[in-house]
Structures are given as structure tokens and as C-alpha cells.
Amino acid sequence: MNNETFYVIAAIIAASLGTALTRFLPFLVFKKHSSSSYLKYLQNTMPLLIMTLLVFYSLSEVKWQETYGIYEILGILCASLCFLWFKNAVLSIFAGIIFYMIIIRFF
Image 1 (cartoon, rainbow, N blue to C red):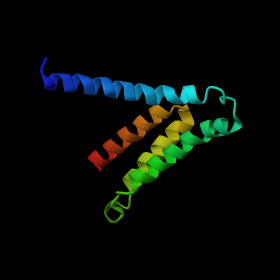
Image 2: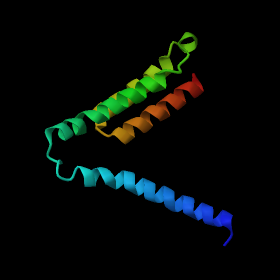
Image 3: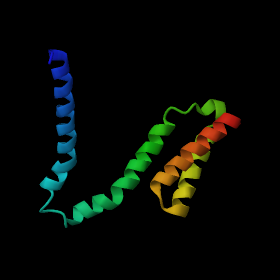
Image 4: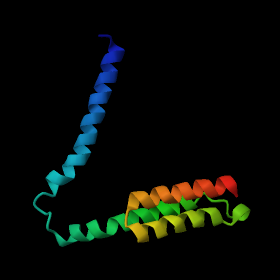
């Protein structure tokens, strides 16, 4: 086995261990504190915060002078309505993306 193959295998193993460690470490660290009211509060509020940050980040590069952001706002509205109707985050994200892609393609 040459050095290049060894480095590739070592990099794959290191990335796998790093990924596994970041996934399992919070469960090990917070095992005793799982019924904490602060953790329950974070569990309930973080998804909304993350989605809000993603929406604002996606709107930061919009050229508001060209289309007034109508296509983007309609995509966000489609995703929001789909989430309110079906209560499925993945479905609403895909529905918003597909609707946005269709509307910018044909209009």
C-alpha cells in the first residue's frame, strides 16, 4: 500500500470518527439533563429560529430592483402554506423549491 492510499483511507476514517463524535457527544453530555426545562425550550424554539435564519439568508442575495422579489416571496409563501396545511417540513421545503423553480422558468 502506497502513502497516497494510506492518506485517503486515514482521511475517510478520521472524517467518519469526527462525524460520529459530533452526532453522539450531545447525547452523552446531556444524558443527565434531558428533562431540563431549558433544553425543552430550545427543542421547541430552535427549528423556527433556524428556518427564519434560512429564509433571511436566502433573501439576502435577491436583486430587488429587477423582479421586486416577487418570485422569492411567492416561493416562501408556497412553502409556508404547504407547511401549515400538511405539517411536514420536508414536503413544504420541496414544494417551495419546486414552485420557485417552475415560476422562474416560465414567467
